[in-house]
Image (cartoon, rainbow, N blue to C red; front, top):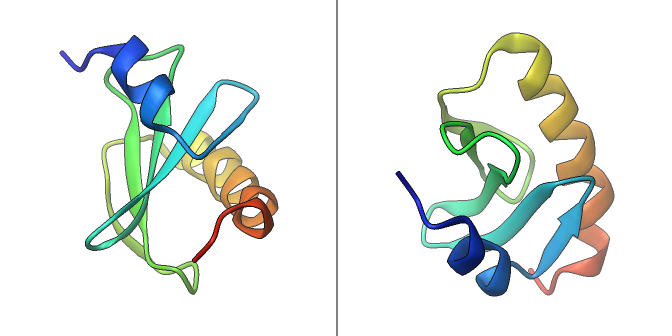
Length: 73
């Protein structure tokens, strides 16, 4: 299980419990309220990989779109 505190500290943006940070593949998004939920998006919004269900993925993508303007990408 990932360390939630470490993920939150490393995040560039946190919106409604979803932490976002840059990685080599794009932007990682972690649900801080569910340790098993994560996704990776490319900077253009293309999904690379996820273990989220469809509903949570749509929520995360909305937060990704909103949070991207606050990140230096």
